[in-house]
Image (cartoon, rainbow, N blue to C red):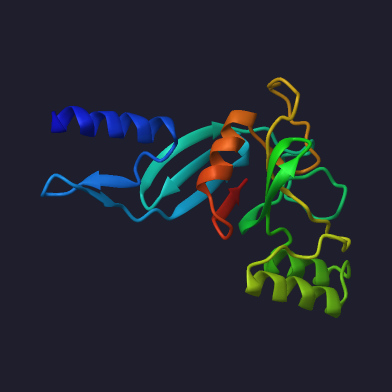
Amino acid sequence: MQVVVRWVMVLGLTLTGVAGTVHASEDGGWQPLEFHPVLEIWKGERRMVLRSGESELRRFPVVLGRAPHYPKEVRGDMRTPVGRYYISEKHVSRFHRFLGISYPNVEDAERGYGRGLIDPAQWADIFVANWRGVMPPPHTRLGGKVGIHGFGGRPYLPIDWTEGCVAISNEDVEYLYAVTPLGTPVIIHE
């Protein structure tokens, strides 16, 4: 009977998206596993992976900004950024759910400052926001408000249509919204 109960619990955890967060202990009880989610995106492959440690938990096909072959440089360039970020905000949006990432990060600010796109005060505001783990200011020439969101009311189309965000199905973004806390690392590769 205990075996049946365990399998029902595992099935329930899998269906609710919490699989991998508990394991059976030696005494037959359940022990929580450490869950440290990381999102990793490969733009060239149009793929995102949710992992915890070395364990891959789930894969997602993605749609990118309209100019996907280059990293984001300025507001309105329709490019998806490349670099190390974190989830800095979460809210309901016209694209179902939105997980904002911390673009621009300090490296983006360094490049922008070096090119004369932002001034020292804007560089400092971006640096402090990243140091504090909050949303960087989105109103500089570098842009902002980049994130992971659903398709909204759109069907899946195998074309890049966002303004620089990463789009996944509404069901997938609902799952990520539930399991990834603020501060979750987001690594975006070319």
